[in-house]
Length: 181
Ligand SMILES: CC(C)(COP(=O)(O)OP(=O)(O)OC[C@H]1O[C@@H](n2cnc3c(N)ncnc32)[C@H](O)[C@@H]1OP(=O)(O)O)[C@@H](O)C(=O)NCCC(=O)NCCS
Image (cartoon, rainbow, N blue to C red):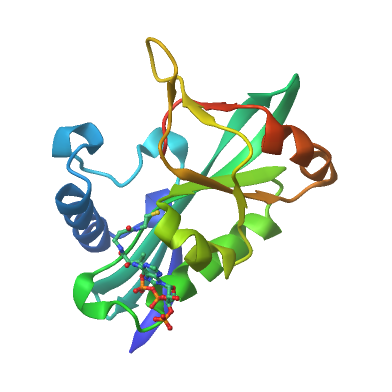
């Protein structure tokens, strides 16, 4: 039976973790030089969204939170990433189910804003789950050394009153992030 399951990091079954990690090592070999053992580091306390058929992982996403300084304000930001569906299971609505569930989880939490990064051809995919593309401002990577412009579309949710009040600033001023999750 196909089921959508949500796990706190400490409850994420190793059998699902290794399937997700293996997918990521093939699809995104530049993350950690391909030497991943977790989809996100445990210290980020990720929440895992897994569409499974028994113990077989079909589609996956993860979310975590970080504090973000922007335009003189501090925000609690939810971050969505590592979204994928195994190739043989694509175009059956599984990715949509996982992203919808992760989005619901984020909206029900206490974050001010949320962000994800994607290629432009997936803008509509995330838009359908309520995410807003931000084209008016650059995303700058600040992982060390000189900040670099991230070549990806930043998509956001403005959740709390504080987050909504910051919408204009997020749409016009560069957003600095430590890594493009
Ligand atoms: C992107 C991805 C997660 C979509 O998963 P999926 O399970 O096939 O998605 P769904 O079946 O729920 O698609 C829902 C809708 O999204 C859109 N969509 C899905 N994949 C798309 C793609 N690669 N390009 C453009 N639109 C896409 C379509 O409108 C689709 O509806 P349709 O099948 O009726 O046309 C999957 O293609 C994938 O794993 N890609 C490789 C990893 C990746 O790029 N992840 C995204 C990181 S930001």
